[in-house]
Image 1 (spheres, rainbow, N blue to C red):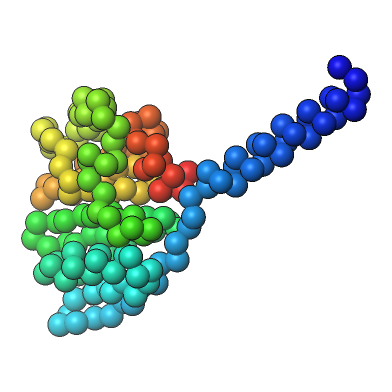
Image 2 (cartoon, one colour):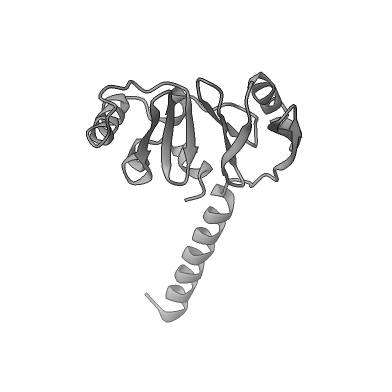
Length: 171
């Protein structure tokens, strides 16, 4: 290969990688929240983006204070500290609530349960089956239970996440 051909090939490769990185990046979404107190409770209201406004229905259903557990440019995770704690995570680009089905890769349910069991081994809680009552955070997947939280660390969670979901937590 001649030097000019090698330079062109290198430049073409660099250009291809740069373009691929640009087109595969998820577009961040700006979240705007309004925090206020009502009847002695801490409340939130999603003001933007427009597609995330349905999150306000989950917030309105909470009978206790609502807290932001995690926020990235692409996902927000909320907690409701009612007598029965409730967690929820939402995609900001669509307003869609995350469920186990759209968060964990198909066929990874057993490894998820094994990660939960490893966590339970260190706690007084002896049994737990994952539900959609969870928050996706940078630290991992946090499930709400009346006895306390059950955590699957981000290290154990990473190989279980679906491709789209891995981008949501900004890691």
